[in-house]
Amino acid sequence: MTAFFHTLTKTLTTWLPAIRRSGKPARRGREPRSGPTGKPHTKAQGLARRRATMRVRRMLAALCAGLAMLTGLQCVRLMVATRPIVIATRTITRGSTIPANALAIREIADDAALEHAFRAVEEAVGMTAQVDIPENGIVVPAMARASPTVSKGHTAIEVSLASSADDLIPGDVVMLSGAAIDQGPNTDPPTENESAGDKSTGDTTTGTALQELCPNAILMAKPTQDANGNITAVFAMRPEEAAAVLQAQTYNAIIAVSAE
Image 1 (cartoon, rainbow, N blue to C red):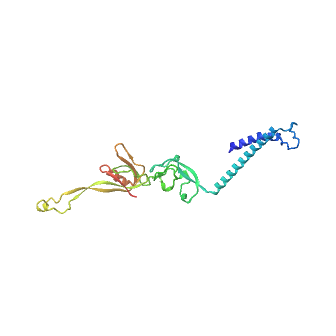
Image 2 (image 1 turned 30 degrees about the horizontal axis):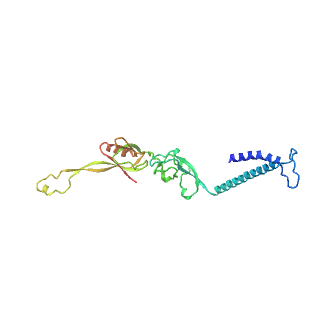
């Protein structure tokens, strides 16, 4: 638009003096008028003047049309209410921490569906994505949650898991359990052979029982897996529960069961 007005101003500055010098063409039946130099106008000068006039009129018409369109667009824009929302400038994967360079502010038409969308980048930075957020997708609170922190009176320990942790993301609450050897007297009724002569009814049976170690362990970071396939995760829990988990994982396998 600036270049258009600059070109128009330059053109008018060049043509208007020529139009003034050319004067008006002679009317039929009268003597041609003289120009500023005292010489009568010629047909070539009159044709040049008319061409210059038409060019100026076209330029003025284009200018008026452009101004009218610009004014109309401004009126429409003022009539449509907009609101700032936060969008993702690139894909954010589930379970990852949302960085500031992956977010941006965009003005879009206001709608009731956007009532709970984030309006500032700072509101979403540092949160954990609960779902995959696509590029140019609107970020709403249901897609993210605050990153977990270790509460007062709790501790965080590293736990080797025997169960799969692919679906776990930071902030998930799980129950940690360990496999324990359960030994006890055999209380089953004796068989016919035992009743006949085998009196070894005091034998013990050996089995595997699941022992609950921590009912509400909070996952602090995304679990990692080494080259050998061993899965390690950091959980926050109470100190007595942490002691039980550390003792149990020395000899037994630890599994994580979703508590939500």
